[in-house]
Image 1: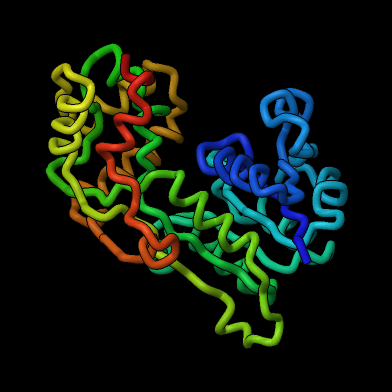
Image 2 (image 1 turned 45 degrees about the vertical axis):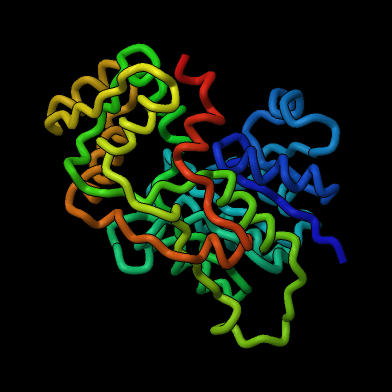
Length: 291
């Protein structure tokens, strides 16, 4: 039986790709969005858009009605788990049978990140779940850091000389769709069906090495500046990024600087049957962003 699938975070990097892949496969996909009218224009007629807001319980019933599988992404603006659990409980009451959660590497051990608490909350629902614990998105470079690269020819982040196992969101989305479209055997024990995967690229790279790749692919020098944290915070806020968002970025780059972001696994290879997308290919595929 083909499941009805609800995608939260449908306008984000990963969510957009998940919706596109499901639509291409002719799966009944519903995009949970804040502005259905505007989003409908982007997604087209094959995707149904419904109003949804984690902080507005009035949107839960219609969004979850008839849904079998849920792709769950934490809204970047929400770190308080108590603002997310009402939606999770509503999903269970509505009959959602499985949740695919977009988590982060190390969430199972790092009680500081909100993903840790969300994973625990999902486990308490006693329904099957898959935790996709992802490394740093390559696509952060063409979103958050695009203007620095395009206009200033620099990678501007305080990551020191630490390595990061960058992953392309297209690989993440392909894996999410694999789980969203597979049949699930309800007879399995819960301990067997709460699965977790560490999704990384094939190699870990320093940002200096990434700058060299940019230089070689786009044909002009790109430099990694490695600014002091106070300067990074000040300049990012000056560029219009919210302070809370910038502080989260500092935490991510501190993880890299301390050498905790270099984990490389074979999970992507095993799940997709092919090597992860390389950062060289990513830079080439997104070439227009840097010009």
